[in-house]
Length: 120
Image 1 (cartoon, helix red, strand yellow):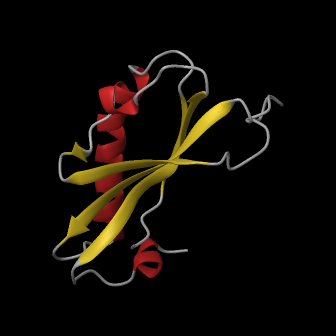
Image 2: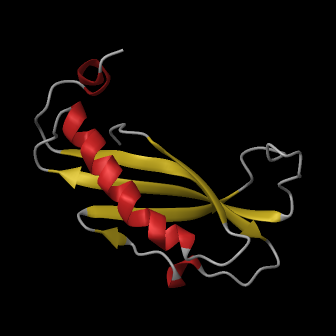
């Protein structure tokens, strides 16, 4: 599957998800993500919203019921939507900028993020 086919031809105003995923931490932990994560990351917007756990168990078999989950999205608004390669590059830059911030969150905070590149 081609990146160009996945994202159509470049051009036109667009809001594109660069990264999508989940963050979580124990429900009884006093974690305020506002202290660790920005709402702006260079030219991208960083959003998170509390959600019900998207799966019942982690890969190690531990139940997710004791965790507070957030859906996590990094999106960017483009006046002229770039092609797939440029979108991929923007997603990589956002990921590289987020890594040290996520690594600095308190023990017990977990995350799973992936490149998305779908238009909103």
